Image 1 (tube, rainbow, N blue to C red):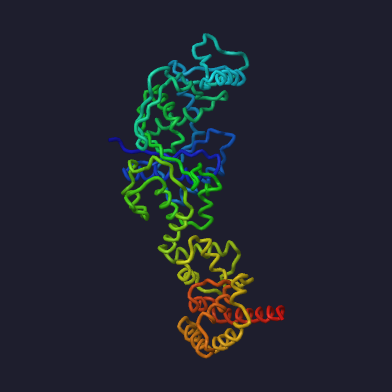
Image 2: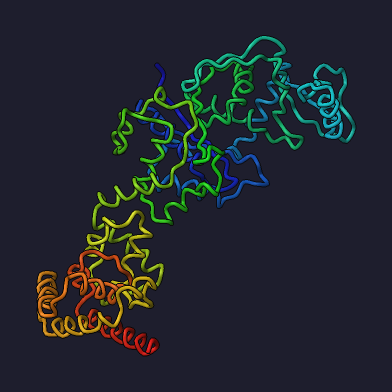
Length: 473
């Protein structure tokens, strides 16, 4: 068996979305599973829409997810001379022809066909014309598609597919300006690059018979095709921005870890028993196209967030601390005078589904509480809490060693002295130091906030209670 060679061939005309990244992952895993070669090809023949910025986003996305390539990036725009060489070959062999029909003529033919309930297609006017050329008209080049017989290929996901040639058009393989069209260029590329397995979205299924005929015309072996199902939203509709079909890099920016995204994508349409969590090594070991589902896969934000929380819990603490620091600096939050970021990570990692959440929940450790959560303040910063906060503040002020166990002891001493319950002290204290009613255990929280900041924030809370009591009087 020849060495497996797969490819990922995105067009740099926009962002790299979830579907494209999953296709890249499947092609990469198949190559790695078989000890083969993974090629990155940039299909940039659409000069008007292709941008360098999109190329960079593709490269960043693959780097972030961890998909290295063995060859590339190879750009179609660098291969124009090669496409023209093959076009000339097809013309010389009578396997392609020049078409001079105007757009108006083509539109008129299609309108007439629609009126007769005939499938709209080119009427092959120039296919066998003796002298079709017209002065001043630059022709397109069309492929001379066979008129009879079927196109049959075995798809590793969808099984045997057979399309009759009388369903296919004489497709344009080069535009009037000489640039190749998609269906032609990819065939030449796949032949020249020795691609053995074409793994792509099932929106390309209709292209495959057309491409298969070009492979045959060029006397080249047909690669093995695997058309993976599309990704849909929870409503069953094609994935769009409202479902979360944004750039892969936006998920990075929102605080998703690459290993979580990779794990989520591999399970979108593929399974290995009931296993949900996969290391990269397990993905490579287990991945097999025969286990790719035929049905569309639904994109589930909640599951992605659940996976991300799992990986946040499992991630190296120093790595998370570096990511936390980076994001805090981007928000222009000073780390000076605050606790060790690694300690904050350990306190919060069980409570955050994304890095953004981790950052949001950590802000009060590094900067003053700007304002209290309205509901939390209304419930806990009431006049009845004033004496308790005053008592515990006095106890804290006399403490020399600021540590969780010491803080814990002082809280219980306050509760006993006041004849109260721990929650009656802890919750107002929690809102005072964090602005919210939900934090890690109160003794850990206060230890991280620090003694001076804790005392200052209790003072601010007491002033808030007094001010509100004055308004209510």
